[in-house]
Length: 136
Image 1 (cartoon, helix red, strand yellow):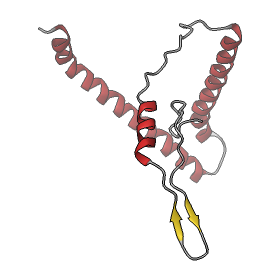
Image 2 (cartoon, rainbow, N blue to C red):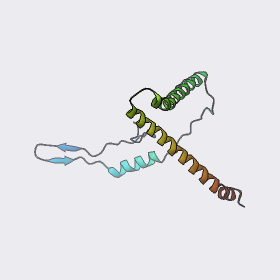
Image 3 (cartoon, rainbow, N blue to C red):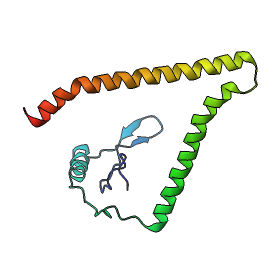
Image 4 (tube, rainbow, N blue to C red):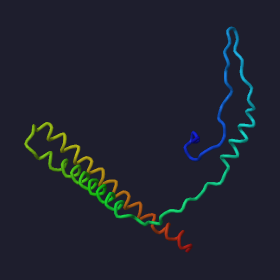
């Protein structure tokens, strides 16, 4: 039976108290809850078995699958990058053209601002990082 967390297999009976309904009353069947807790605790504290990994060895089939995935990702990225750049300059209504142009250049401006801000932070923090790394 799989654990509810999906991390390990458990051999603990996870049956809780059951309600037995009769005509005029309800009774609870007695099950030792602390015993079930102890079994669950022991099963969770078992050491995890380390399975050997294939240490970066890739089969030819897996290589071809990865290549196809990366190729499709690259093509989709190129299309979604180039299309918004050339779309505002096509012959459409001027209102749509102005809106798309504004969105394009505002995103480009914010990206440039973020890039130069990150570059400035990197150059200002570089001496501190080097000092702490080299313990000077």
